[in-house]
Amino acid sequence: MSRNPVRCKRPQATSPQPAVEGNPSDDAIIDQAHALYGSDAATAVAYCGLEAWFEGEEVEFRRFARLFRRLRN
Image (tube, rainbow, N blue to C red):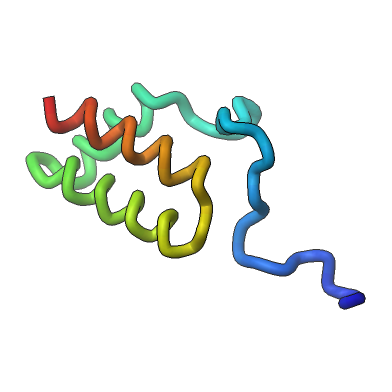
């Protein structure tokens, strides 16, 4: 067993819902994405979703997918 308690960059969530503590709400993330990226906010969120997918973080991927759907509409 490794002495390093951290095995990956981010801890994996075990529940289907993201943890509320310490995570900004979806509305806050959308507002920040619009402030930072303007009309490209949906693209930026899509890239975050892809990164989560490739890292194997299904919970985060689903959250970014939900945010992307909201930004697209």
